[in-house]
Length: 113
Length: 112
Image: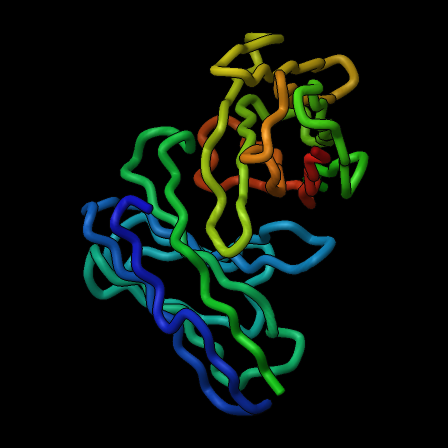
């Protein structure tokens, strides 16, 4: 998995609570991505980063924020979790080459009750 | 708007047969297409890609076909094996874009 670690791997939380998911990479890749995966929707891009402190929104960014204070870490925060944010979250990284070099982490299963 | 979709959500094939997974896309600006394989409990993994200046590309036991006229992409897996059981996603990106758009995915099941 190209040195990508997602934490936690599983989390159960209550509606209205803040949640932060972490993606850590050891490959010094420039680009990092957060996707969510839901049945019937495939993978949808939430936010991505093209460098330290450089981020941009994806197609489903509402309710999510991200931060990248150093190359190796990309944090995804749900400020106030809702049941609609129950999903599997995947982090991905690449080094600036094409998307054939996009590597995914193993995912975080988040359940919002 | 942009969309990439798959014709069938599930596909069952006999072990040893060839599998064909289809994908339609709507963004005419897309010029790079990728197939990913996702096994249970894991993140997607790159299988094969193709650029819009090609209509066919072959890998090991896999072939991707691109028909730009009808905006259709397919993945052919030869001599399907039990290890091919997974969900397969197509993805596309326009030239210069920094993000991929994924299709819904097709679950491939291999019957013994």
